[in-house]
Length: 386
Image (cartoon, rainbow, N blue to C red; front, side, top):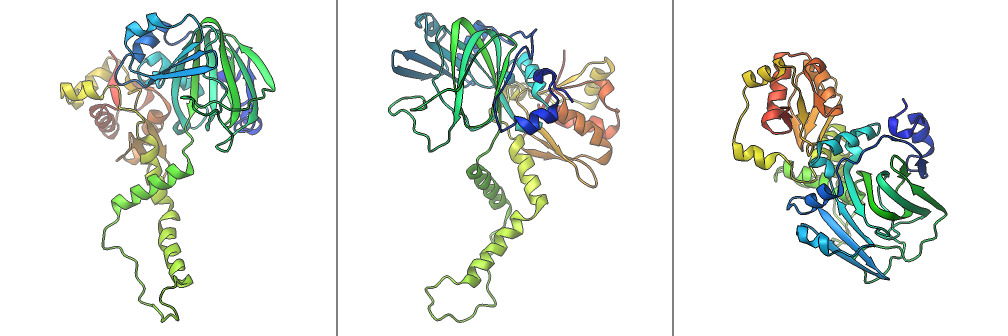
């Protein structure tokens, strides 16, 4: 397999030599690339209540950070240079951005987080920093200079009394200018500093989910706690007399280990938790408010009529899908839920989790498959094309 964005490099080569190991500059990865939105649309998104956005202005040695939503009049008051607008999850709101994100589907889909876009004036940037996750930086318009070098983590000093996290010491070892269609891949912890060269710099950032151990443990224990009854208690019918009753005995510690191991060693418990956790939407789903306001519930007849016209269904851009292979049938997870399916729906489940568009020719229209699609449609995890 040779993903398009890797410009001919075999996937196995990328995974074995670069993924989470070292940076990779990919020239002319997408030579015909068009930005999914222009600067005006991006600014419009940043004015929306449900959109996460930031504005960073660099004046001399000072940094200013503002959080959206913004008033559109603000943009007419910005300085001519040295500012950057960043908008998260553009793929949730712009179908073309969601399609662009699919080009990176050669990494497990649950690992892909969202597509952030930044617009920068000449000299704009966010300063030298590092990320705790993998990222592909795709230049879609204008030019951006990237300086990279060094490996950093939470122990690395950052500049004090600044609203943005900037490395105190940054010594780049490489410097590249990216043009439209060029991509820079960076593993976690690699220091980097991007600066716009000229106005009209639009960069897409494809970030990957990397939950911290802290988050994994907290989320897993919350999941367990919600499902365990109060009657399940610590027990010690084999309690033996102790010389000092103030001691926590090794016998007690082993019992606690046994309780914890009972849950952490059960792959079914872990997979059910992880499927629900990793598909829980990061932001409110875009179509939810419209769906609930309309209070419309689709019927099986409406779904069949739509498919009969050779029309497709589209995954809600804000929804998350994943599945797990099991002996009897695939287990489907959608938006934090486990969805009941039957064995003959396994091919459809795989299509749903791998594609953003599901067309009539992609699956067999059995009763089980149609009912599954109807459930997802009425949950607004899918919507009908016009």
